[in-house]
Length: 240
Length: 321
Image 1 (spheres, chains in turn brown, purple):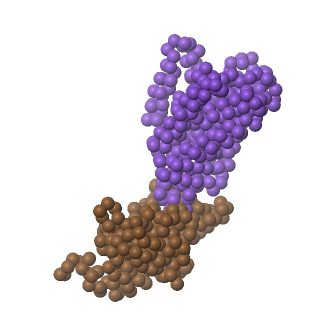
Image 2: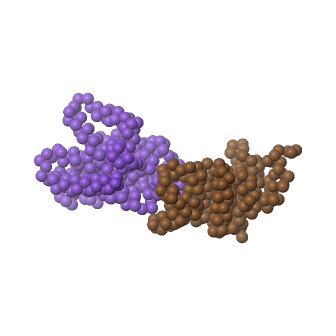
Image 3: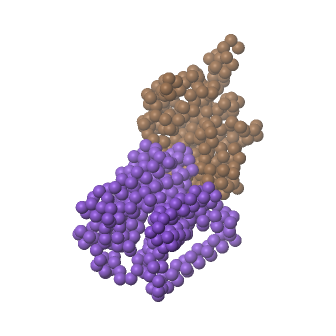
């Protein structure tokens, strides 16, 4: 079953074509990795899906519904949650409050006590137990990322867009993050993620999509993609 | 420990207010009662202003709402004899409508920060000129005297302290409303919005709606403050809708402490006493010197005591914030 269908999506900034005629599908329950060099349009693609940018042309269909012109908060409530490449969180709120925001406004829980309980459970799930009452501005970079992720999970998403989870993580933390992603998938959440750490993407993605200069250049099983001539060319240059 | 102390202080305030209620009628100085009334009216207006101000919606146009409330109820009373008790709600609805008309485009198309403040500043200037220009019914710059017809129904009392009761009750109402907001889920949307707008939107918060809701709440009650003021003073002029008035409402909140419940009250007490003192001391010589001094104070406060008077005391006493 297809959960997200993107067709012929394009976005230009001035003369630069950030995303150029990209089409793809995300199947329900899968982990789809998105790789590509810096500036290849990966984050722009996420910004288009989450509603931060309006596409110039093309359509985004989520669960059979056209969300191309919807606003970010509407898209959230339909079931797409995202995290940001440059970690975002509400700095003056505590970890728990951050998660509660997601739970109330994204997850649609009206009762504050229910939202608080739910949020505590999610904090524990991502490994933030004991840090619930710490203001986010005092957290380490890794814990900030986890807070952002916990807030996204509290929104009860059907599709989770993760923009570079592993950047800046040490090997142990990387392993933990990979395990966490697998556990998220086990909960029935579809994951579409951008990642530079090839080992991690290849390790847990069902499929991988590669972008360069705003265009999709390859898509397929991880072992196919990493052996694709075009992909190797992009990463290592021509005539390697 | 600190929290207990904090609660105790709040009880002290409540007891102080009850004593004030009992003591007012026997106070011999009517001038003092007049000043107290002013203090609580401005404290209420500033509290309602801070509903927006503390979340980064710095309005410099609350005078417009205040003036709209005052003029609506007063004109309805003077011309049609409609009781200000009803007129104040009509004024509130008027002010809320204006707030929506001005606020919605701002919120929908992302007019933020200083630009939003400028739009609101323009609103209060426009409102002041409107009241001056409608000379036929508002009396223009000469102002408007509210017909004197004492009676509970007319919101007019033979003794000043009744107005003081109303002003105090209205301030207490503002605190109660604030407590209600603080205890609910709406506060999370407000806090999230003031921390990071884009992230808030991506957490499912309809920014435009949240901003409109808090603006409507704030403008409605500020307009009612205007009616109370008009009734208590029984004279209004277009200046109460103007820029100076708007800045005063904002300044009082900043002076006392934006992020605490009693901050605006303390700011109002300091501000009103100070300007009354200067006015009595200097009389008609050096008109405007109090505003000059307050302007300087504002600069000093924003640089050295961003938490305001009460905010700073609280930080020293409880080491929190």
